Length: 287
Image (cartoon, rainbow, N blue to C red; front, side, top):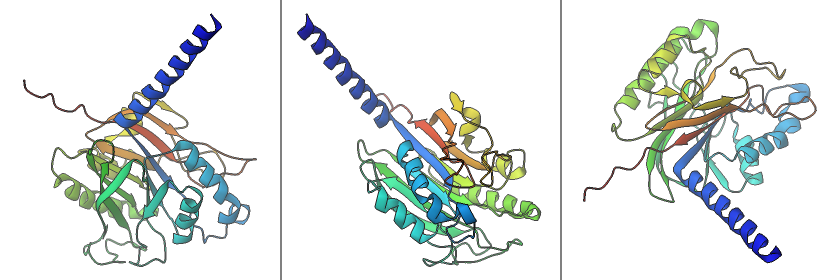
């Protein structure tokens, strides 16, 4: 009887593991995270004081793809040195390794990059560091076409950080229109994921522009958890939902705002957001 019970438990554990692996193969786990620049003078919240908590937060969530904002190269390099299952790519806002990056991290056991690039949110999008529309800082998009290693599914991914000042709403609107035009030009059957810090609440025009093509995971997910708002300025009390995961061609199963902290200290001044996206069912073959 004891042997039979042990065999039953072993079979149940194996079945659970297979189901978990099957679910992972059918979904894409996406994270957006404004990591707060590592060169700011934040006192007890300086990068060196919070970097290991950030590594822990990312490692615990295990995103397949992670879009960061305000990332400095040394921050990205530190994260992948501690999480070797990830690599990252991106370019600084001025077109070199300096300044902030829209760094994109991905799991090398799950995904491969087919193509990638960058463009700037300006009248000269191919010119690194370009600024128009009244921006006081360069704003850009880092993008890639990813392919899953398990079954060769492809999706287009892009990551951005919109202008931050109150007076920048016209620039945010122009940025959304530029982004929408590029996304709308993609093949309609290609799934899309867009992550970013949009520095705007969902009742503003840029959200309406982007969601004319894409869905907002926070609004569409079957299940959501954590606070709706994401920017908290290291207080743990968020007051704005400015970090979004938008998508086309998937179904949002879950979305969660992650509030990890340690002794009242947080990995960033933003809470990251994680969404589990289900791939569309493959078309049935005709008999």
